[in-house]
Length: 499
Ligand SMILES: *Cc1c(COP(=O)(O)O)cnc(C)c1O
Image 1: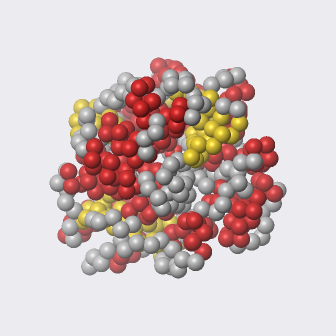
Image 2: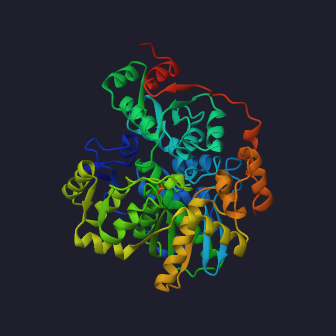
Image 3: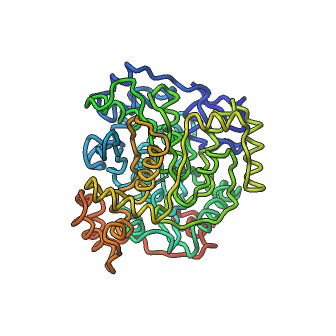
């Protein structure tokens, strides 16, 4: 099977080339030329298999230049205990009548990004070997929290890789900071910068695209790569858990094979919900894909009206991983919906870059409405939802998941749809203890982060994940804070590259 670019439908490259390159030279994203199909009996047959077996089977449909043994080896290394809390890898909790929470955060960093970032390093290093790029890769990351830590855990001690993460000094939560500054591994570097996330991001971009840096790395037998969510190798592992959770609900008799479910996803960059769309296109019985946003509701407006307009105030919310005004993976969906018209895509995204706005055709508007429903809720409603779920169903959820649960209720009320629903849960409540306690208790106690975590354990349905608990006693390894102009000199020092 081959891949093409959303900005050049004439391109034909292999999956390992798509993963090695990350983004196409024409600025587009790689998409599969056709979507592999999954029969109901194949879905039924996945029930009872281990998560790595399911992953190897499904990845094999897309990554056709990898062997089954290779994929099973990578999946076995990525999805295993004690990295994950149990061999089940994902958990399904019954929330209320016909509604399930798909917990994607039982991995090493307690965020759903582990689902992709635990396996990406294996896919990437193998892709580089297959494409004869026998160089050491340097992963550069600018992070506002979850991605940095999940990438560090994924790449730590992976032979042939080094990872350098920059985060804004005051732009991540105390728990996220602690997670990164105590990072273990022999190929990892973490550094704070004086500035905000945009400063970190533009600093990284500058190095990434600099010919001077390219040459410097080449001289030392290295190349840059990125771990962000536009890489196909990060998207494809996310398809697995939708199929896996469906198979599990069939196995337990809660769904009959072929019965349609709706999937609700708290959305930021549109990667997670796009994976659910691909699962549906493959043949997973899915009704509506419900896109949930916080006050940064650019996607809600877009799905409802067909006008994408990022010219609006940016809100800092209780669900920071969804505070995004440009959802880059949307480009892939639009490419499929507009009939693979790469000229059309180029026009829309040029318009987004120059004026912050574009409007899709009526055909695309109708196609969007066919598969998707969109809704949003603000911080007040998010807190109310956390409290309601806590009181009515004795379940504790993080603010991102609460946004999805609120939009799920809104959808059911508006449409009367009686299908079963799977709500994707993207973070452990312990990563957002202050917000969750505020919602449940009506105030945030003036305490240190670890005291808040203990307080949350006292009221919640979960014990503290081991990986967060042990942070308290881990030594801080990375203390350095640099100015936003000094990313280059930090990198030279870290990688031991002479000027
Ligand atoms: C990254 C993230 C999201 C958004 O996922 P996308 O794939 O970018 O839409 C939602 N919730 C949490 C906790 C995240 O870390």
